[in-house]
Image 1 (spheres, helix red, strand yellow):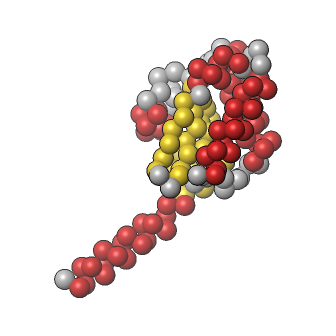
Image 2 (tube, helix red, strand yellow):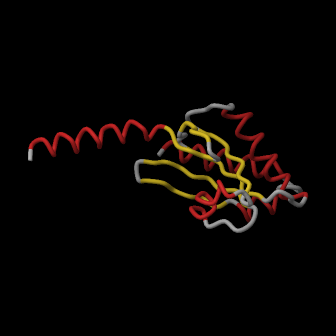
Image 3 (tube, one colour):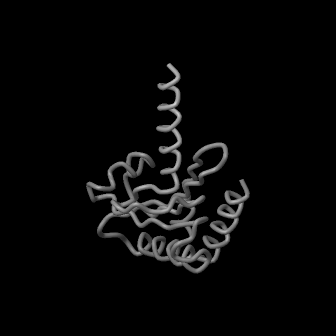
Length: 140
């Protein structure tokens, strides 16, 4: 019985050490505290493309390319390898989501409607909201 407990603990600890990375788009990527996901199809309208461009630039300009706190994922929903993410977020069209990893678990925040409303007419508003939401998640 003692051997089973030790074996369980070893397996548990080894699994925990692998949680700092996760596979996204077939790549083993560092797990950031907040992940920004832009879901899209191969072809997109002007607004779709603008939401992707704005959200990507926001993350790069404010957190860099390989931040351990915030990372960006560009996800083509038409690709088979992205099916798990599409299912997880219940996406069926273009969308912008935040996924925060907090002490209370994962928190998803769907910013799609908001982002599409302001992408063309007032992109600074998107940057302000992303800043506020991400900073709040980073404090948790």
